Amino acid sequence: MFDPDYPYMNDLFRRLSGDEEAFDALVSFLTSNNYRLISCRDNQIALDYVINYSDKELPLKASWAERTRGGFSAQYDYKVKEPPYFSLRVPMLKELLARFGEMDDELKSFVVQANRNCDGCRYCVQTDKTGKRPLICVRVRHDEKSYALCPLFPGFYYCWESLSNDLVKYIVAYLTFINKVFTT
Image (cartoon, rainbow, N blue to C red; front, side, top):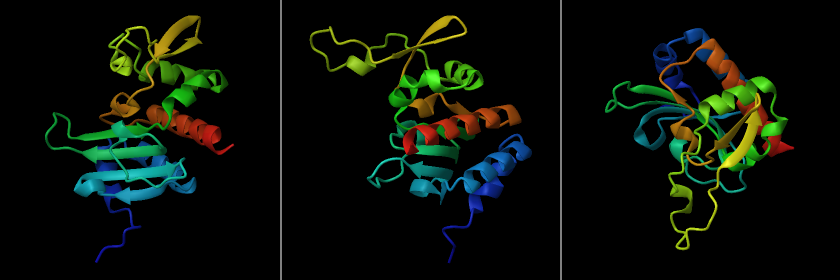
């Protein structure tokens, strides 16, 4: 009845994005770089563009639970205050943060601004009975400041209620960096 490769959800999320020109630029990047389109994931009003960087083809999850796919996700959730939200799919974040020094200065600024800083919640070491296991945060330096970045659940903080040309510029830069890291 419906073509699974046709981007039905694009029109909906384009109108909800806050900046249709920025949305179009992002979709143009994603389609021209062979991101796979998935509409209505898990019977939700969702639009996903993904590249799998793993040998395994696991079921696609929400962006907050992402582990192996890079890309972009848009979702509409009527239960939250701002129903449409847009998120970056960041796979294997700890490996990416370990290569922070390879990012250009603009991308570094975006990452330290968007990525969650470690607040010592100890979620990453909750199974440690000795209390001696170090936190898994990744320490980076940028603009003469030091940051301890959390590599867990990036979909919770690389997430926005609307898009803009500046934001799309950074999303494209980060996705380009991700692809470079995991395909070379």
